[in-house]
Amino acid sequence: MNIRNNIVNYLFDKDYIVCLYDDRVYFFNYKYLEYSDEKEMVVSLVDRKMVVEGSGMTIVKMTKEELLIRGSVIGVKVIMKNE
Image 1: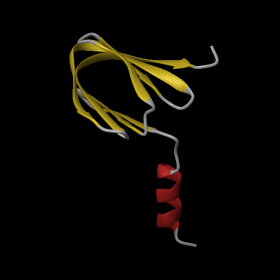
Image 2 (image 1 turned 90 degrees about the vertical axis):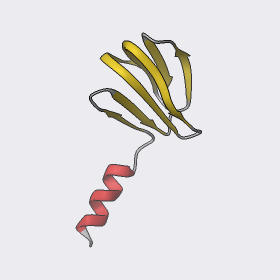
Image 3 (image 1 turned 90 degrees about the horizontal axis):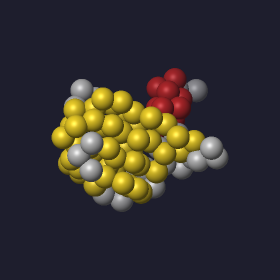
Image 4 (image 1 turned 60 degrees about the horizontal axis):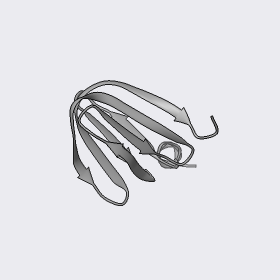
């Protein structure tokens, strides 16, 4: 059994990935972008929505699988879809 392969499989066997950096938020395998302006972005994932709040927010990259938002992020809210 290869430990490295087990770790890689654990880390990347997800429905989606969200990474928060100093001035960016990265989504991989998101469903769709529900709402977008310079103060708030709402991203729909498999089982939840994420609301990214901040200022000066813009979409840097948007493909079928990836979304990269840049701006001054103040907070991130998670809303479960069954709520």
